[in-house]
Length: 187
Image (cartoon, rainbow, N blue to C red; front, top):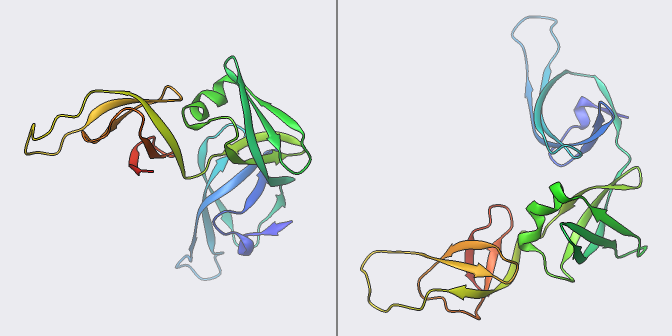
């Protein structure tokens, strides 16, 4: 059981029967005498991925979620679904099509991830911040073509398309940000 004084960014609590990750917490003291301090939270429901806001009174209690993070690995894609393995117990989990399509552009077989388990079932997969992928298709390099910064489209080995600087060639490894899918640098 947690009280509102335990709330901090990154804490996982249980609200309405679902695990919720606290993204932001602010404490607001009212000006009226005798009024309780208000604790405003922004949280993500880890099952539905919705980001919601909720205000608690100081001293309110919430349940601790039966949630754990474990090291995992991406095994393979089975059609539109993905298979992941817990590296500690070697237990395998399947990720449904609607959840896997946002992860697939950044996953190669063997990619290490963090698995979020709620009551023994997989509810979310956390990707590393950056991944290294190979450019499989891009336009040829044009030297001295322009004086302004430009980009060109590239296709990666996972099929993901993104904008890259014009100096990159097919076959080069690049770092990609998994949060927004943009180019960071050469690997």
